[in-house]
Image 1 (tube, rainbow, N blue to C red):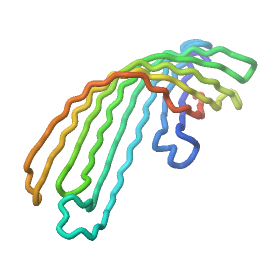
Image 2: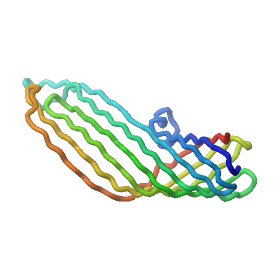
Image 3: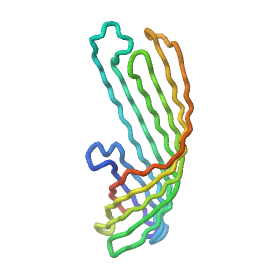
Image 4: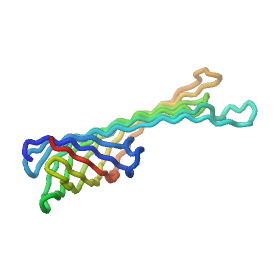
Amino acid sequence: HSGQNVVLFQIDKGVTLKSFEGSTISFKRMLSEKRAIRIGLTINGNHTNQDFQTNIPDSVNHFKDSQISSANVTVFLSLQTMKSFGKNIFFYSGYGLTLGFNHYWVNPNIDYRQQADTYTIGPIAYIGVEYFLNSRISLSGEYGLTGYYSYRVSKFKSYYTNTDIGKTKLYEHSFGINSLTPKLGLAIYL
């Protein structure tokens, strides 16, 4: 396996078509039989339109054509080690660094809009098991933890009869530890 390139496709949050909103593709370069460098990319997002109808006359706070959008991109780089247990089964672990960006936008009604951008950095660690179906294709299961520091800038705009009447900015800093959703993967060794 030394010097071999590997492409890994992963799904998390259960195995449904909606899972591809949280899928990861990664590239692994085998340095030796037991070590590899891995870089991964996760992209997900969604957009929702809502139209609430109300029978309250001249209500300023009713929801009409509400829209919520979000987009998230995460990149990680890690060093991975493997240990063989039998001919086709390998246990592996990895550690490295993850970087993320999240854009969130909400327009709940004609009087208010919010936008937030979040930047995240932190360590990542994971463990997994890989089962080789043949010499070029394997299935895997993986679980991990990530630490994070995030910086978020939120912008709020208020309107009255479509006229901008005020703006507010909020700056947030946070840190913590998150468990990663278990992932199922399919690897193709090139």
